[in-house]
Length: 152
Image (cartoon, rainbow, N blue to C red):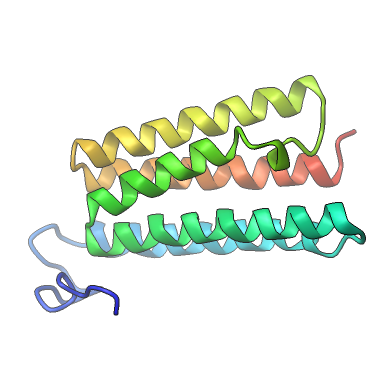
């Protein structure tokens, strides 16, 4: 069963000790996560065994992304840190390397740097910094998926 330790001590969406920022950050993070989900879906539609392997890999990345969002919502910095590390490591997996171009390599490196910033913010227990870093990670995802769909 998922932990809801913070949900019982806070009124979500209403000003609390942190003001409106926390609620707005959560809404922004959820919106960007939706964009990322939309960016990942077309890769699953391809045919063949390689496409199946990529689709499974993308689902694993989504699970890590879900853990980041859950960690942000619950202020569970350990969860955020672990998920950021898993996303960074995933970018080194051979299934990640769907294109062999200089731009793709650069975008993958930028993604890892964004994941490292997310991990650092979690280690520092900086919720606002982690939320902003997560938005940067998801923007990197969207940009890369746009590039993969149309590399020209």
